[in-house]
Structures are given as structure tokens and as C-alpha cells.
Image (cartoon, rainbow, N blue to C red):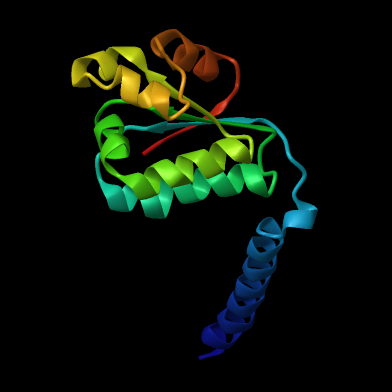
Length: 144
């Protein structure tokens, strides 16, 4: 019994410190922007786009978690984007707020979507070397 009594207060203190740490991590005014984030969006799943990739990417730029945020539209995500007007609206909002949006030309050519992506204001170019540069020069890279 004595050992349980010692563990519980220590556990409560640990939980309290964790809560304070997490709360501080999400406070905008205490988070100074730093670094660069590249989000590689490849998923054709609309739930992933709406509820994960776009939400995090846009918020990271809007609240200043990173100085520079780039969204790379690669592979099946291109077809999803062209077919989903609400995602197109979200892309435009991200661009307005400073997120750089780019698309892979090899994929766009495979899907015959080059002109549609360009019409959305998305530069379409080879992305193999830029992604390699992001990885080699200290960018944080997330893949969805």
C-alpha cells in the first residue's frame, strides 16, 4: 500500500506538468516562427486532405509555427484536388495566407492535369530535386 501512495502524487505531478507543457505549445503568442516546413500531400483520401493535411498546413503558416510553409501536391492528390471544389477553395485560402503550393509535373502529366493545376495558380514543375533539397537542407518534411 505504501508504494501506491508514493506513486499517485508523482503521477499527478507528471500529468500536471504535461498538461502545462502541451497548453504552452499550442499558444500562438508564445510560439516564435522558425524553420521551414514542406508538406508532401500524396493521398487521394478526402478525409486526409480536409482533416489532416490542409488543416495542419494552413494553421502552421497562419499562426506562425514555421517561417515558410510549402504544400507539394504529388500523385493521387492531384486528381482529388481537381475534382473537389472545396479543396480548391482551401488551396486558394492557403495561398492567400502565404503557403507556397507546388505540384509535381511528372504526376500531372501522367494524370493529364497540367493545365487544370496551372489554372488554380499552382506552379507545376519537377519536384524530385526540390524535395531532395528540402530534405538535405534542414526543412521539416511531413507526408500525408
